[in-house]
Amino acid sequence: MKAAVLTRFHFSASKFVACLALSYGLCSAANSFAQTESPSLLQQPAQQQPNQTATGDSASPLRSRPQGGPVNLPSNSGQYWQEYDLRPYTKELNQIDRPHQAIVDWVLRETGTDAWFTEPFGFINADRDTLRVYHTQQMHEIVKKVHENFVNGTFVPQLYGLRMVSISNPNWRTRAHTLMRSVKAQSPGVNAYLVSKENNALLLAMLRGRSDFRELAAVDIVVHNGQSQVLEQLRGRNFVENQQPAANAFPPYMPVTGEIKEGFRLQLSPMLSIDHKTVDLVLKCDIDQVEKLTNVNLELPTATGQQFNTQIQVPQLVSWRLHERFRWPADQVLVLSCGVVAAPQGAPDNTLLGQGGSVLGLDRLVPGMNTGRADALMIIEYKGDASSRVANAPASGSSAPVSPLSRGRY
Image (cartoon, rainbow, N blue to C red; front, side, top):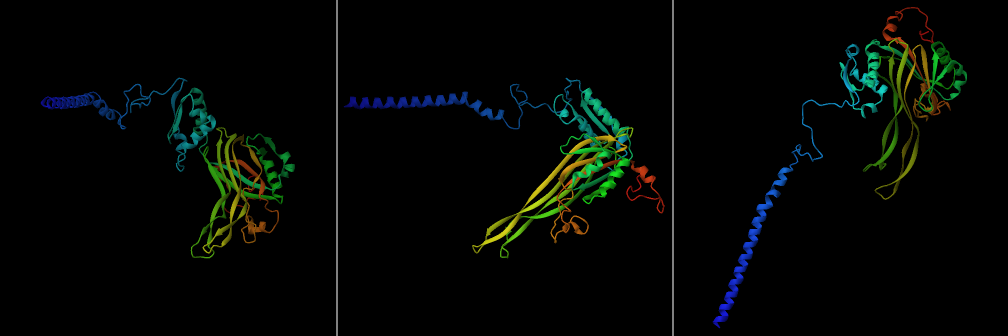
């Protein structure tokens, strides 16, 4: 009996010792794991802090350059740096904000914008005093020509005459064709003509004799050489674009009106050559017209469960765009026919309660006076220095005869 008890105790003691040994082994293994693996796991977040840049790691694909210090610009295509003095031109334009921007615009018109954003590497920058260019010899030659037109050209404001007319029927060309010389235009549907100043007076007199002739604008534009001038004639056209609920009111829905600006916006950027014999003009014209408003019926629910019948309007908009560059002799007149497009003055409200587009609203009553489409003509004429025109103008009270057609120009 004692032998059995001793044996059982011996077994239990040996089992206890084995458990202690197993526990000690696990603890030793855990301590060994903590000593070998834990330091690397604890140090890893410290090595990858988001506010640190691994500039020393050559294998990293994202490496930032050190800040400051000179930068070696690419010169594999022979690029070089050159500065152009703009003060002879900009000092005369104290009243114009950022006159140097026009020089950059004309350089980009000559070179194109892709040349500055593709290979070979180059850039252009300007302030009021200096134009800075880094590019190849070929590009510098183009920049030099534009620079000379500005700093060696005229600093006196120039005078340009602009007329915008519309003619409903394009058959005006039948009689005018012999007075004009056709030149090439790049924009689809645009016809360009050159007319002598004498024939231009005959052309205007002939056009004014037509019943479908309408003169939209006749202005003299004073602009410095190379700068831009904007002429616009816009008016708002209201329409019902939505219906919103009106609480405790009748009718239960109130119209929400919108507005569309229709008319034309014209931007001219003329450049006169150094010898005053050639005019280089960049012309941008936008015409928007609401051709008609289409009524759409709506059936809207009410608080009583009935239907409320109302309408909204969907505008049918006609637009036309022209952006082209023209060059012609300064002693001639440029005539542009835009084809039968949206009428630049826009279609007026021809109802009896609406506002007509002509004087006294006659086009509300006379059928066919406004068809919504017309042949838009632009007549552009260079008239010389604006200062000389003012200086040579007759004094007040002078009895010098003035023709009502030429207005003293011929």
